[in-house]
Length: 300
Image 1 (cartoon, helix red, strand yellow):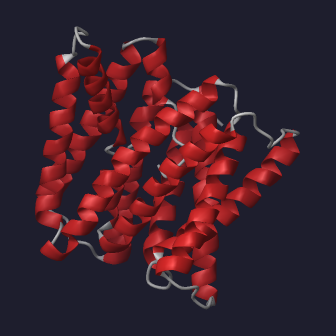
Image 2 (image 1 turned 120 degrees about the vertical axis):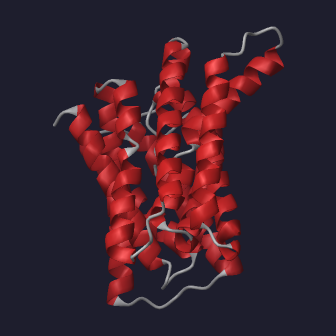
């Protein structure tokens, strides 16, 4: 299977996962969904590592712990936002991670002192936030504003998680090991959240299948996306990744009867364009920057 085709399929699976999360939110708390998603992911990655003959032992447990803490925090916030927002809105806010990455580069250049700031990165960041304003204004009611802010924060934490995944990759950690420890982190944090602020709900056939589907879709999409980035062109993959917003938009209209507003559609287009531009500028900045376009191992 070619890298572009794997990316298209991965974005479709991530959108399917988002549908399952939104439906499961009716039956379960966010902590429970994260916990079961982590359980399914850990079991799948353990089986995959065994099949490949890869060891799950690591020499950098501290890095995995920190990466899992940030990544799982982003995941919890994103799942929470999905439960209270239209699906494409929640997806788009999480996909702001590329724009956040550009902002981190600008902040790093300022802190270094004397480093030239690429004005094109500044434009992409400003454009990204214009897109956010367009999306939030027509699609989020006053009661949903909190969910919108949470979704925006999830995108920022996702960008931090991507940097940590890149650092682990430079140390030679295989993707299966990184995803395994991330899934274990999700299982642990989800369990703690459930015990502290939620409760373990009784399973129904519908609820159990939604939880299982969430884990299967997410993990399969992660594997496909990782393979695509390993074999394909980073900028092409980064561009195709935004198809997840299109898929979620279609699902939202067909399954949840969400209204279509021209301002929200324009905002999504602006954010997609800003994200692609940010990925292109990071790739053009040199080898170190291009590695930051590696696929995330969280959704998405």
